[in-house]
Structures are given as C-alpha cells and as structure tokens.
Length: 488
Ligand code: B12
Ligand code: SF4
Image (cartoon, rainbow, N blue to C red; front, top):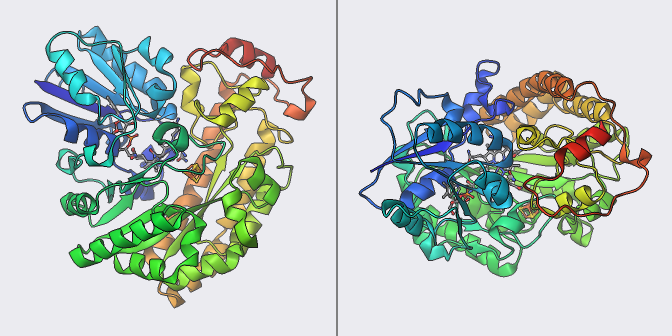
C-alpha cells in the first residue's frame, strides 16, 4: 500500500522565495509532523513524503498512491485543498490533519475525505485500519498524546537538501497567550518526551544543524527547567556533535547552569518572543510572564550572549495599544535589548485562538473570503482591522522597523559583537542579510496583497461604530462576505 504525505507550500511565505533570496534555502524547515505520522505508520506501508517548499513535484508522473495525507498550517490551507482536489479527482482518498484542519474541521471536511483533528498518536493506526477495511470515517478526533506514544520520526524519508533537521522534545504551553494556537492545540500541560527517545532521535538526524521545534525548550516552572537540564546533560553525554537552535522564554537568562549546559549540548542560538515593547502590550496579549520581577531585557539578553549564543527576538505589531511610530519603537527596543536578529509579525487572528474570538466578535476580521484568504494568514499581512493603525500604516511601520533594524550600519555594528564575542559570526551575518533581503521582498508581497483587496479603503477599528458582539457559530465558514464587504 502506498501512502503519500504532503506538506503544501504557500508562495507568499518567504522561505519558498529561494530564487529571489538564495539565503532562504537555509531556512526551509522540515515538516516534522509528517515525519512523526510516518513514524506511526505500520511497516507494510510504502511511504513517500513531499515537501512542496523544496519545489512542486509532478504528482501525475508519480506512482499513484492508495492514500494521501496532507498537513497544513492555516496559511497553507488553500494549497492543501487544491492538492486534495487533484487527488480526489483521480479517485485517491485524502486525509487531512494538522493545526488548520483541527481548528477548522467543518471547512476541511467539505474538501477532503477524512479529517483528523488534534495530535495523531492515539488515532492514526485506527484511521489506517479503517481505510484498509474500506470504512474510512469523515472525522477522527485525536487527543493530547501520552509522551510515550510519540514515535521516533522518520528522518530518513526526506531528501538531503535541508540545512536544518528538526526534533521535538516537549509539547504544550501553560502560558496561553491570546494570539497563539499552541495552548489550544497542544494543551496547557507541558509534556516532555522521554530523554532516551530524544537522544535517539537526534542520532537519526542526518543534518549537522537541528531546529528544536518546541515552543519553549525549558518551560516555565522549576520542574520543567530541571527536566530541561536533565535532557541537556544527556545530550552532552551522547556527544552528538550537532549544533542546534531552539525557542525559549526569557527565563533561560536567569539560570547560569542552564545556559552552560545548553551551550555544551550544542545550542548556538535561541529565539525569544518579546512580543511588545510596552507593559500594556504584554498585558493585552496576556504575555505578562515577560514582565515578572521588572525584568531588564537588555541584561537578560547579554547574559545569554555572553555564553556565545545568538539571540533572535520576535515582536508583534498591531496590538490595540500600538499607534503610529510603533515600527521605530520596536526597532529601538530590539536594538536596546541587543538582540542579533529581529522577527516582526503582524497581529493575526488565527482560528482557535482567543484573539480570533475577540476580533470576530468585534467584526474586525476583514480578510475573510475563506478558505482562499487563509493564504494571507502568514503573520506578515494585516488581515484584521487594527485599533489605531490602518493597513497602510501597518505596511509603513513594518518597513520602518525593518529598515532601521536591518540597515547596513546596524548590521556592521552588530557584526563587531559577533566577532568579539565569538558568537557564530557567519551564522548571524547570513541570517541578518537574509532577513534584510526578505524585508525587501515583503514590499512586493504586501503590494500583491493590497491589490488583491481590490483597492477598498481600510479603516482603523477606532473609527468603527460598535462591535457586533456576535460570535460566529463556526470558524469554518465565518460569514466571510459579510465581514469583508463592510470592512474594506
Ligand atoms: C516548526 C514550526 C514552524 C516551521 C515550519 C516547519 C514545518 N514545515 O513544519 C517554520 C519556522 C517554517 C514555521 C513557519 C510558520 N509558522 Co510555525 N510553527 C512551528 C512549530 C513551532 C512546530 C511545528 C512542529 O513541527 N510541531 C511538531 C509536530 C510533531 O506537530 P504537528 O505538526 O502539529 O503534527 C502533529 C499533529 O498536528 C498531527 N498532524 C500533522 N499533520 C498531519 C497530517 C495528517 C494527515 C494527520 C492524520 C495528522 C497530522 O500529527 C502530528 C503528531 O501528533 C509550531 C508550534 C507547534 N507546537 O506545533 C508553529 C506553528 C505551527 N506555526 C505557526 C505559524 C503561524 C507559522 C507561520 C504562518 C508564521 C510564522 N511567522 O511563524 C509560518 C508559516 C509558514 C508557511 N509555510 O506558510 C502557528 C500555526 C497556527 C495556524 N493556525 O496555522 C503555530 C502553531 C505556532 C503558533 N504560535 O501558533 N513554523
Ligand atoms: S506564544 Fe509562546 S509562550 Fe505564549 S502560549 Fe504560545 S508558545 Fe506559549
């Protein structure tokens, strides 16, 4: 039996723009969810994994699969449905899973044969069994996996051609920030995998560089941090010679032993969500964790960098507290904290989040001709109505922020720090130049997006009459035309 697993692409996302920016080839990340799914699949299946981010294959020329499995983040959903439709026309049943299908199951079930919601560990075997018996159901509900159920991902199934391999050591996040899907999807309990499994999986990764995909490598409590230290010690003992990067909360800076162990275990950089330069902004999105004990971000970043680690900082623009000038404010904060890289997102209501519920109730989700418009949910485009910023303001402020942070003068200044502190100068330089180039490419994407909205004028929500207060019954078909026509 042939199983074809597909990660659809979104041509608006920067990583597929390899022709326009050759550095992006280093940031095509593996679709780990599909490799885990393959790990759950019995041996008798012949599995092929296609990552469209590496290029579009000739699906017609490939041996016809018996079953297709598609994954998708929200921004990939339109392409996922397009691919699904091609296979269904040829009589091949399509199963869709992953975060988007889980948050919008009704929408997905109208476009594929079977939807699997949630984590797949507890349910995938049943799906395959039912398929073999010709009894596929329209929907299966997965639940949060016991960590022992998480298999070793099939890292052998994708071609070399990636700079980074990927691995997951923990799932779930207790912090439940309003804009984020993780607590809704993976739950608020922090679940760490068995250390032996993680070490074993690291060994299966061919690449010398690895992305640890955890939303937070270290967790937030003393117990989580103790678990992280145990894992790091095991990785040091295993002496794998891998270099890796990970996401973490800022509290990683508070524990010298943790930092030392991370470096000894191969960590070369951390990605930290600062989110907003203001306390009001952090309160708005419920990321008060960042503000505990009146933290000095600059000192925290320095402590991490003194260990030789590169620090990437992520911010969100478009919060209700953000007004004109926010672009410069974020760049100034990022420069002041001293981060080596800046990742700027636009506040985006993703289905299933509290932010979605709030914005939907206030009729602020304006780019909503779903499912087609999901392609704009890349976190870089203004798909909602923002309190004090128009769509054009968002574009301008983003541009100002990127120009300021990624000016050549700033990059050269940061380069001294990388050289003197021996902090991965080549890695940091390449990442800076790549982000600088992507910021330019963003201007084209924004223009295309604006043109797609038909030149309708965009107003800030502060000019709105009043929130509707009406919650849509389902995310799958949220009265798209109602919202979009009144908003642009
Ligand atoms: C690594 C990662 C990335 C990598 C992508 C790697 C890749 N190709 O998968 C990069 C950095 C490129 C990336 C980019 C983006 N990401 Co991202 N990313 C993640 C992260 C941190 C981990 C994903 C992962 O590997 N998880 C581990 C695997 C094992 O879990 P999984 O994929 O969920 O798979 C399980 C189930 O979902 C299920 N499953 C999955 N697929 C399928 C398919 C079938 C058929 C079945 C049956 C089951 C099934 O089975 C698996 C095992 O249980 C998640 C957060 C998270 N915790 O998931 C965010 C996350 C997925 N990203 C998110 C977002 C928003 C984005 C971006 C749009 C924006 C951005 N700036 O980051 C872009 C989109 C890129 C694009 N192509 O359009 C959101 C998605 C929310 C949403 N509704 O879409 C998440 C949830 C983070 C968040 N804060 O909310 N991301
Ligand atoms: S943004 Fe980060 S800290 Fe907040 S809920 Fe999501 S994963 Fe957790």
